[in-house]
Amino acid sequence: MTNTFKDKSGQGGYGFVSKGKLLNGHPIAVKLLKASQENGEAFINEVASISRTSHVNVVTLLGFSFEGKQKALIYEFMPNGSLDKFTLNNKDKNNLWLTWEMLYQIAIGIALGLQYLHRGCNTQILHFDIKPHNILSDESFCSKISNFGLAKLCPKKECHFNFRSKRNYRVSCLRSLELGHKRSFI
Image (cartoon, rainbow, N blue to C red; front, top):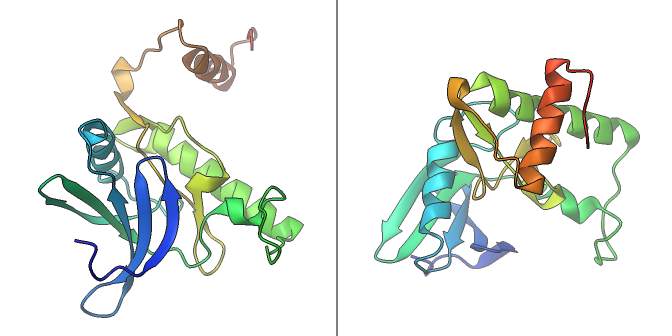
């Protein structure tokens, strides 16, 4: 499956991403997951989550592949990569700088993408892992949310939170603020 992938453009907890090309020459990003039993749920979550979406600020899943134990997700290619390469923590001495206008547009794009995932889909999608590494940019610096491995699918009418988890508690407090409740214990 990886014989023709030479350009390894990223690495994460579940595997690595390589740049590839379709037969028509169109560039793609191939997320090749590590072969293990444990990431089967992450693969299913990512395919189930992203295949139900269609929004300018959410990365487009073009397809997926199973070859034995090897699993791959095929996405639209984002030439500007992830937002983390533009942060001050990046050790690359040639890192690029973003203007305030670009940062503002990126933030608006992330907010619109999250709003879509939380309210615009038939099934509410809670990402649970928004960070610079999971925000990709196209050639125009349009920000797109990616990496749905930890996402939770939640039918809108049945979405409840487990208050024993600190992460879920913070999400539900933010949800209370969003719904206009006056009290919150964050």
